[in-house]
Length: 310
Length: 287
Image: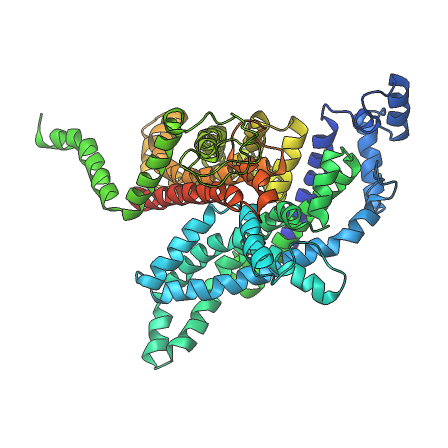
């Protein structure tokens, strides 16, 4: 286990390093000039030059990168060009919104996936199976933001069960405000999860040990318990990959529901050309994805000796 | 021509007709083909079917309901919603198909080479794939479109950068299996060049997977194009596109809920059709 963990950790570190370089390059070879964008059309070349100097943009690419990495090592993500505060404090104020949204959406997608996949696998090639498969095929092409708008239309505007958007200012309000966005986000990944877990369960259901369990007279429900434990492994690593997609989708979903999280910060920083914030957010979101994939891989290895020894 | 030669001669024809028979028996493929056929026909015939030009404003009849003149009503600028829906199909289908061409060919080529040769080439390619996959899909696409500039060109370039990795990874793993098969060993043993082995013996056995995935990929791309349109980073106004239609319609949910709902349904139905084709192909092409 230790050897596997060390190898996996090392490759995750390499990826994070490469992500840091890629983010930096992506935003520094960009043709648009952030100083020009902030000062507007009418600034004199002297003013633009002064601001570029203040932000260190006139230094060479290499020395800019050394400074960027040096700051990162000390935990400094840079100053926002516009908000006059550190990027770290901007992010700290918003990270809990995005983290809660991702957490709740993950929970919802598991709650949706497990029973549907089990139902489809047990009733294979019968009506429930066809229904679940049709739903998951239709769900693949469902634009998350549009589904969010439809949910707002039905549950907020017509039935008044949930707020149209916003984060609220008490714990109860947070939860209530998150239910529709989290449901929207979970629908972005549930179809893929259902499809793969169904296939996994059908494979396990055909295994010899299941026949043994049935032969010794175990109830169908208990058999399903054994089956799901074996079918959940491939779905687990798939869940890891899909949480990455989910994190990306929250950018759009936060916009639909007016949530002040990292995603909406990213969108507004992009339109205002606030480069340090864009750079920091991209890095944080990508690192989050790497960490989640690392965790699911380690968990899978913990549960399945074939992975850690193979 | 002796019997064996005759058999060899007939083989390809017979295989093709077997594929065709299997295809006709796949209800998913049939249903998907019908749905997509109808949508493509509607998009192609948009100039004939549209009640009005898609960008023709009529400020005296904004946000109008369903009528014989405007079957799906009018939007906030008095443009005919059905016409925009049909022209939007042209835009989004075209962008979706074009956007996957480069990822499909480049990713398949890279995955084949990495899987076939292994070693350093493979290790470097797979690390690059890991890095691209580490970025949350929408974060990377939004960032790239921002860097390149919003619009259709930005979408094509962003997908060229992001999307090939999925093909590369899938094709690499099947190539690894095929590479070690007896018939590839036989072909190499017979002294065929690498290029010939790759194109005649490896690719025909791996490419089906890329084709099946491409169907699901077009769904993903169309959803992404619509999403970028919604964020104002995709297809730029006044060109008709389902995403910008949904985004504009969101402001009128309480009075004209169909403006945002119908373009979204169009995306869902298109996605359903393409996924059904993908599922059908997966069963038909399975060796």
